[in-house]
Structure formats: C-alpha cells, structure tokens
Image 1 (cartoon, rainbow, N blue to C red):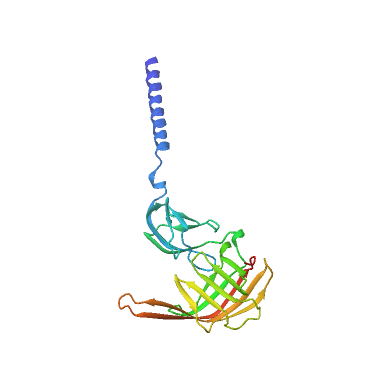
Image 2 (cartoon, rainbow, N blue to C red):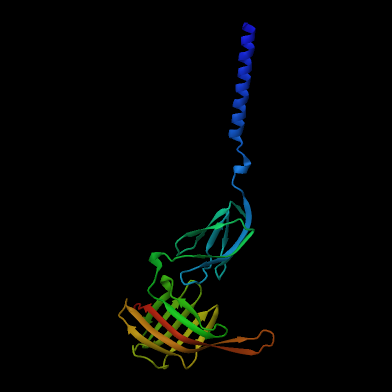
Length: 260
C-alpha cells in the first residue's frame, strides 16, 4: 500500500514539474507572431521653414540613421529598419526641434515635408519681400532678413544710407540711397540682390522709395522696383550673356545702426 501511494505521489510530481517547465518556456520565448513586425524602407523629402523655403544643413534622424539636408532642404535616407510607425526627428540651429511620425509599411516613402519654426528669440521684424520676374523665375517671391546679423542700415559721411539683409538660405539684398526720406530718384542710388546663387545689379531704372527713416536703433523702411541685370559667359562658345530680372514689388525694413 505504501508503495502504491509513493508511485502516485511521484507521478503527481512529474506531471506538475512538466507543467512548470512548459510554463517557464512560454514566458521566456513569447510567441513570435505577437512581436512587432519590422520593415525596411527608404525615406526622402524636404525640410522647410515657415515660408516654404528649404532649410540647408538640418539634421534628419530616422531609424537610427542621421543625414544632413542639402542646400534646398532635401534629404534621402536609405535602408532603414523600423516598425509600422517610425519617428523622424529634425534639428537645426536657430529652429525649434520637431518630429513627425510616419507609416513605414511601404518599401519607399518620398516627398515628405516637415516644417520648422524659427526660435522665438530669433524672429526678426526686419524682412524683405522680392517678387522677381525674369531669368526663368517668373514671379517668384523670396524673403530675406531672417538672421539677427543679417539686417543693418548705416548712415555714412558721404550723405548716403547703406543697408543690407541676408537670409539663412542665401538670399540677400544691399542698397545705397540718399538720406532724404522722400527719395524717389535714381541719383546716388544703387542696389544688388542675390537669389539662387546668382548676383543681379540694379539697372539705371531702379528706384528706391524710403517711407520711414528713424533715429539710431529705429527702423529704416522703404520699397524698390525696377530691372536688375547679371552677366555671364557661355563656357562652350565664350559668348557674353546678359540676363534681366524685373523686381515687381520689393520692400525692406532694417534697423538703423550707429553712424559711421
């Protein structure tokens, strides 16, 4: 009788031990079907500022890889792995860091656009809108004056005021005009502007009209319009080339600095 009880007890222990081992095996090795599925994909797109211009030298991170945007704000990251949802984070000096969640189930995701806002302490009241028509630009509007050091106006001993504005993306204007706030003539007036890496010089018909001329620390505001030209050389033929761009409605607003 004792032998029979011992056999039953031993059998009970074996059954429970097997169940315990089986339970531990399931805990340590979860069903792979329930695990998040991984995807391999590629991403491409552009990083833009608040007015839709591309931001160069921005850092874009996705799936553990980081790449720097090109001059027009474009980027491309290949062969990155992630789950169905992936976070794309972007950072750039002068802008608030931002991120965007995307669906990575597709093999290739293109034309992503992520906008970045300038940091609050780097917003400037000084801006300049240029609407240009010519040299293939066809009424393209650009904005300059978006960095703290890029907007100045100085009155010089020669009786003229000099001003310049520069943007992060390479747009720039520079101008010279007599101090007279009612100036509408082309006398002693000159301007240049840079757009898309090309420099244009004011033709004789360009006019600058100054609407406000404040004291030191105040604002210098005005508008300008007219035709600008740039010159180039055809590298194949050596022939001189001339391009014209018409500014339909340009405006500027700079902070007046100490006089020279």
